[in-house]
Image (cartoon, rainbow over all chains, first blue to last red; front, side, top):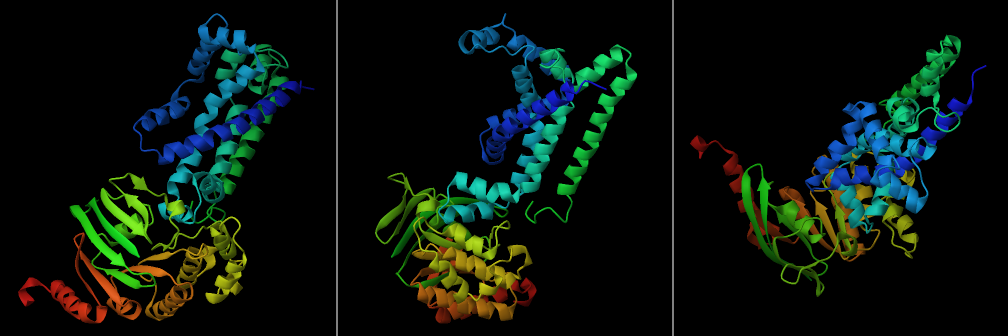
Length: 224
Length: 239
């Protein structure tokens, strides 16, 4: 039997990351959609950076930043008693940054498609921005939000480079499935490696099926 | 009384245009802004409900200043208490007919107004339907009903019948007159349909290139206007 801890840890990491990402991404996507400030183009590029950057690059810089030998890392340790290198908390932060575009982009694309008149109608009916966002915008971009949640979750499950850089390979703390798989291959335990690999493969297939299902034309709301 | 005196530079496909209008509307009146598309009619409505900001000028309603560029007053759309029916109706697709109306309700406002409006607009049987299964005329009635849930002082209609066929237009015109009278509204209608203007309003403002070029009763003003627009449509060699 394979060690189930990496699987459990992976899903715990993906769940925590996705929940935090949702609350970060909705305001961020909203700001990117409606802001006219020029700085938004820089923000947009920063958010999308993990899409094209090798994960190890992001991991490398996060490792440097989190290191207690450096300013940010020592600040966190001294004032918050928080160490982010080779810990689960560090993995969460790294995963949030790494999966950010997968949550922000679908929601942003959904919000851009909402007709301006619907938002204006809500304002003239006495409702503020927050009420409009929660009761009009988000329900009408439901498919985009679900896509963002599923993709961010799946992407976190599948990450390797960032996790290895920031988290290392500590059993029950940072050894997620992709690391465990690599570990087993290194040790030439191919049948064990295969169990981890097939778990990820089936999960990825299921995830994409869900994304295609919620975005099928018959299910997507007329506006989106 | 609605008093408007505003200026705004507009940028359209035809180039830059200076919108410069001043007009007054008495309480309970139903007036029309009539003119070709691109003349600035919709922008005037948008400035009235706070969705567009004039470059300079004033807008006051019943003695209350809603906009004054010199004093930097600009009330938000949320507090202006204006009902508006958008050209595309702007119904919330995620809500049923009834929920669309309920969304508009004020805190502490009685829900009885919802049933009253559903009945008045003959929408009771459709109250659980989502907008995407409704016909254009039905959507129009929902939009009209929703715009007066908050019992606004002013109702603004932006070419409300442009997407409907002739028979439906007459029906919707009846509904507009009905709510206008029943809720004692001051109504401003934007239109470029002469028949609609003559049927609905007693006073019309002719708007061309961002300016009010004439005002008066539609019966005396518009025949000339209609003739002129027909002449304009003819090729130059036939004039």
